[in-house]
Image (cartoon, rainbow, N blue to C red; front, side, top):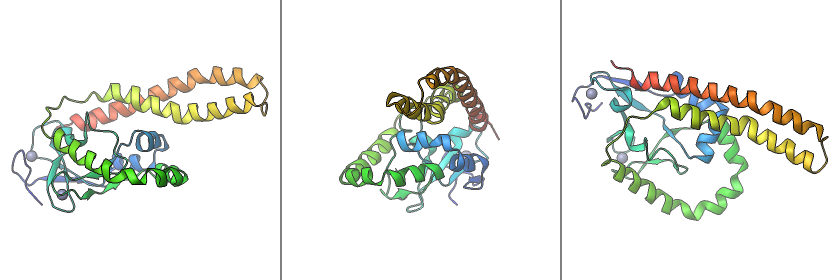
Length: 218
Ligand SMILES: [Zn+2]
Ligand SMILES: [Zn+2]
């Protein structure tokens, strides 16, 4: 294993598929939103330096399996966290960095196969854009991410869109074409508020867990 680019020590904790955060990424169906719509990807392997006295986010490195370069996790963090539908690409050797995939997102992508055929010609351009973005992002000074706010707004909102928005739109459509009684519309609206509250609480908990994980020292 390579030494830590910050402190030059070799004291790593390897975070891979067996880690609870990573397992959560694979199994939580709410993350379909993050993967399929936002194009967010989590590398399959991350190294966390135990010797650095920095917030977790800043001592997490992503090894390129092809060339061995260690990339700062922040390269695909704030400002470059989304749009990675073609995966993460090493800005050093231009090879793909293996990512974890959410099981439900893979299922949804299977259903979207025709769309993927249509978009296929754009893939090489998108990959080039990805490598450029990661290279550019190396030079950007990073702000500390605000996990709780992100959790409530993006994760909670996304969860609501997937778990309530999609079914509600389907039911509303069925009502519009007369397959379901109009009376259900009231129930749908009454249900929106508790569902939203639940999702926002879920988002807050997610944000709090991420905040704890990422800012933990030692
Ligand atoms: Zn270190
Ligand atoms: Zn590489």
